[in-house]
Image (cartoon, rainbow, N blue to C red; front, side, top):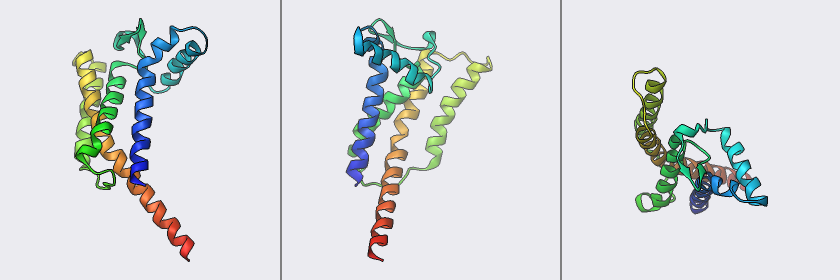
Length: 162
């Protein structure tokens, strides 16, 4: 079960990240690929402001999400790829919460300090704080889902016996 969870998270993160990156390429094409590209911008608009001046550009257009979001996604995907080399796929132990709070706090501080006019963030600060947060997330999400599905499996196996 743990390998299914791992590969599902890995595949989902790969597809999510690749779709965000290749949306401008798809949109530049005619026909169905172009419509898929247009859909990509609409799809990602629910999770990202997509401001042009805060987004990386590729294939003659902006990536479907801002620099911070694409850094979260690529950080997550990279960590998901290397996860089995650091932890076993059946790992159910979640790291200390302070690690996640620290990473999210850096990202939040970068955004809030810019919004408040205290510190002007840059592509670099948005990319670094997004990448750090994204990199840390799989170490919580993968064992969390492994634990969830293990408990569900045990629960339903007990129900069959009784």
